[in-house]
Length: 420
Image (cartoon, rainbow, N blue to C red; front, side, top):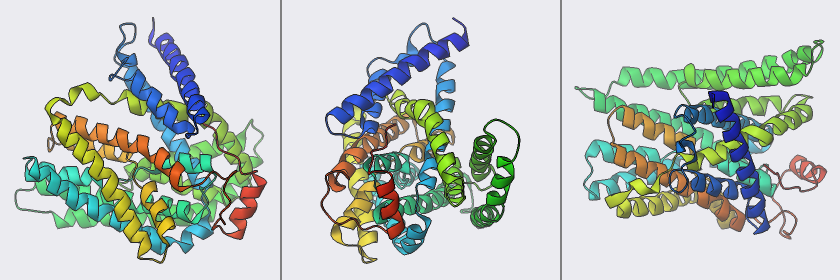
C-alpha cells in the first residue's frame, strides 16, 4: 500500500476505536476521554502495537503524531474560548500560588527520590524538572465534559497551567544550561530567555486584543467560503508557531491565548462551533489515542519499583502542591482539592521535556520510558479523580460558585456534557 492508503486505513482504525472507547467509558459513568486513552494503550506497543504491524511503514507514526499535535492545539484553542476571562483575572493570585506549589514540591521531591535510586545529580534534577510539568489538555477536556470549564476552580487550573509552562521552560533552561556549561550557569542567556518569554506574552496579548476583533470583522466581509473560520485557523496556528519559535514556550500556550482573545469577539459562538466540529470529529480523538501509542510498559524491566514510586509521587506531589497553593489564597478545602487534582495530568509538556533531556543526553532511554509511563498514568487517573471531586452538572445539588455570566452561559448550554 502507498503511504496515503496506509494513513487512511490507520485513521479508520483510530477513529473507530476512539469513539467506541469514549462511548463505552461514558456507559460506565467515566469521561469519554478515559476510554480514548485506554484504547490508545491497547493499540500501542504494550498490547497490539498498531503502528508496528507489517503493512504499516515506520514513517506513518510521525504522520499520526503530527495530526495528534494539531488536535491538542485545537483542543487548547477551544479551552481558551471556554475560559471566562473575568473569572480568570479574579483568580490570578490563586493560579500563581497553585502553580508555584505545583512546581516546588514535584521538583524537590522528584530529585530526592531519584537520588535514592542511584541516579546522578543531573539525571535526578532533570527527573524533578519533568515532574513539574502540567499538561492541562486532558483536564480541560474533562472539565468541558463535566460543564466546569468556566468554574472558579476550572479557570484557576487553566491559569496555573499557563504559569507552570513558563516556569517549566525556565527550569529546563537552567538545568540544560548548567549541564552544558563548564563554568556554571550562563545567566546572560537565561535572562535573555526570560525577557523573550515576557515580551511574547505582553505583545501577543496586547496586539491580539487590539487588532484581532477588527481583522475578524474584515474577514467576515470577504466573499469566500467560511472566511471567518479559515481566518481563525490561520491565526490559531500562527500563535501556536510564534509561541514556540519566538516565545520559547509550548505552542499550545499560544493556541490557548488566542482562544481567549477570539472569545471576546462577536463571532465567538460561530467560531467555537466550527472549530469543535473539525477538532472533535478528527484531530482530538487522534491526539488522545496517540498518547497510548507512545507507551510501552514491556520496556520497564528492572525499573518497575522506581516507576511505581515516581508515578505515586507525581500524583501526590502535584495535587498537594496545587492544594496548598490554592488553600493559601482563601480557597476552601474542596475548591483547593479540585485545583490540585486538575493539575496532576502530564502529557505533551512532560513528554517534550523528557525528549529534550534524552536528546541532550542528560537522561537515558530507561528514564525516558519511565517518564512516558508516568505521563500516561497521571493522564489516565486525572479524569477519574476529577469526576469524583466535581459532581455531575445534571445531578449536582450543591451551589455552583460561578459568576453570573458563567451561570447564564451554563444554562444556555443546557448543562450539556461535551462529547469528543
